[in-house]
Image (cartoon, rainbow, N blue to C red; front, side, top):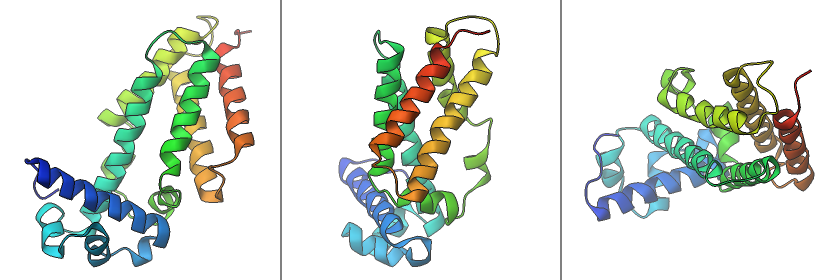
Length: 197
């Protein structure tokens, strides 16, 4: 961002711009994504948009960052309280699908059309460390045995399964599939709760 919003009104403006950008990407794709369309949909002038975002690439990164922050918030909530493995996984799958369903076309565009930056793909980023860390905490809490794969390896597998299923569901227009969610829950529960051989 060009500058961080300091006042409540500025934060509302930035949020309106980011939300409008997410809607336009979701509904029209990268090819039709322009700052003029975003400003109009957000109800602000293009000049106001440029106060915070110097170009549409910076706006894409803000949209992507908001999504990643939403995913981290879900992971933080998922680890709260004492839950059975089934409840933990069911809540996590439900909330992750819900987050990806807000603007269902957005994730396909972010994954397949919009440019991304090296920081987004960095496997050593602060986001990745925290995200995998939440899965590792789940492995620590729920795995049946201390033998076998390390917590970190199991955490990466759980994360990759979750992300792969949800992102491909977004590509296929299947985010609303009850059967897909049920099968993902079954898969993750089986992996987390299975005793090592």
